[in-house]
Length: 288
Image (cartoon, rainbow, N blue to C red; front, side, top):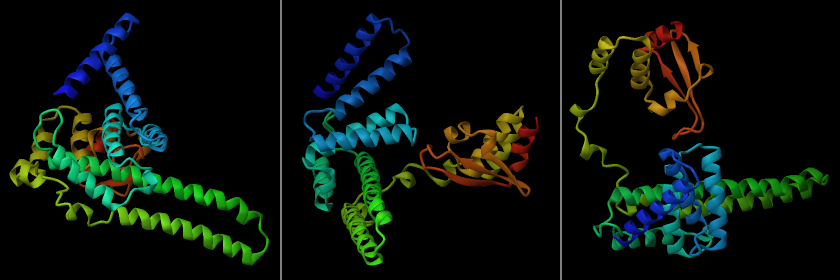
């Protein structure tokens, strides 16, 4: 409860400060709050300097490359902050035991605001965000190793020395990959008795839209745009923001249908999806 009051006080203080500075747009104030809180979580004195540096770089990557929203950046900062304070070590030294101990800590600690046990879905979200951080960190460190060795390999003319450099480079990369795989084995969530989703518990088959439901919706639509949006979302499985962020250049005609190129900064990354069965609705909108 104290944490909840602290956050409300923090938001209210920033609100009044921005009002004095002439900022009256409520959405703008909310953005300032999220940015300010995210940065303070990064700069938290309870974190090691190495943790702060990696967290800052990771959130920069997620904002600039993955284009995630401010609320998602804040969520990551909050969860990684909790994890970093608990392990009290450089992220590069984290192992499976640290992850297991962290989950045990979360289950014992519970929800610090309500005092109730922490939901398994909340623990899962934290682990997913932590794993994503380490995937990025592993890739970044491997890229640095390759970059460090590249100049030496290109400058060396002796074949034996080149092979030795490549061997040392590959050994370092394999060590990093092995460390990541050991810390986050595929069986980890199962070992921790965490469910990836409670989707089946929350929804029954009859709750989901069927093809006949979509056809009925299309029959009552009065314009080409709405028909194209509904039909394309249903067949492609794309999220609404993925569809809305597409440009005409991302829609390519292919046979009797279309191939849609989902932008790389969307939640599940860049990918191509097909629209064939309901292609006529997308075609009608594009032609009109």
